Image (cartoon, rainbow, N blue to C red):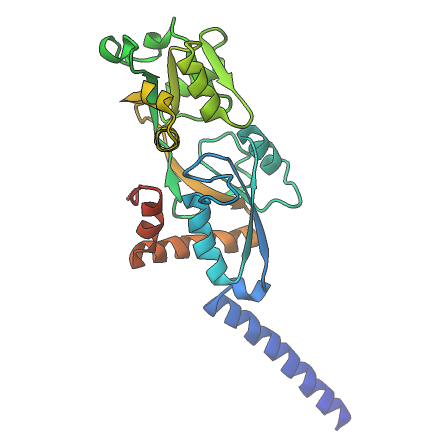
Length: 282
């Protein structure tokens, strides 16, 4: 009789464990992990992601917070320069769970898992001083038309045109002047104002937002720079929260995919974008 009771107790414990596992799968995988913290590496590139104590977080952070906090996760955003983000992700730092990036970024694809939905898009523009003769006389006609022009860019960036990305990667001073580290937008802005570069190739959403905020703050120099021509789009411009291709990463990717579809359907995604003067990109 005692043996039968022991076997019955073991069966009940096993059945309870299996039932709990099924409940997690059916209802909400995230809640099975308790209040799990996810650490995401991001750049300081407002309005995507912002480094500000009292200002906005950036719409990428807002979207991720709206999705994951609802599923009982805590998010930590670490704002690093772009090259460090890639290096830390590729090195599989123990405290890192994901990063923000694109499929054509030079990250270790065997480590990476991309959700089914993107979180943003990157497009680029050519910027010049408003008094530059390039605005009226110059057109982009392939990378040959960039030669003999001093160009400001960011080291390690992938641009919306494949040939421009390769040209800027292989070029050298004085004609290609890539910056690295923090504050790249403001630093290239200053270089353009002072005539150290002729053209600045930059992320359109980030740079237009920066110039608008500078004008709001009373910086008249922001009126001296204009994005006058779009960079052609010949590569994938979708941006994703990239997780590791493991069991936890697959859960995070599924939570994100379901979450952003829900935000888009109920209108909350558009509400977030409007905070930054933007619209849903789809």
